[in-house]
Image (cartoon, rainbow, N blue to C red; front, side, top):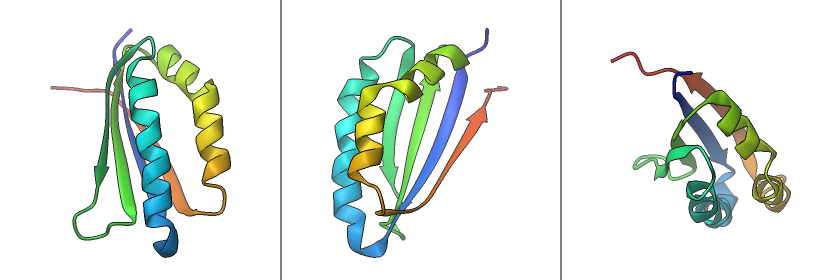
Amino acid sequence: MAALTIVANINAKADKIELVKAELEKLIPITRAEAGCLQYDLHQDNDNPAHFLFFENWESRVSWQAHMENQHLQDYLAATEGMVESFTVEEMTRVG
């Protein structure tokens, strides 16, 4: 099965940027240690600091789905409830 690339966009509410950023940063070392995680990088938009982007590569969709079920993701969602304006996930496959 081909590797899976995930592009996740998180837009924090303007008054919650630092709180959301701190919670997102907590996910990095835990997720990078997960089985099947090839890359898990957090980015912050230079012009819009409320916009965060995770660029992720996983061995398979199965390994990514296992990540999405993990407790640390549930903890993040609970900690940031009401602080995020929007959240989108794009599943992609590298073609070149």
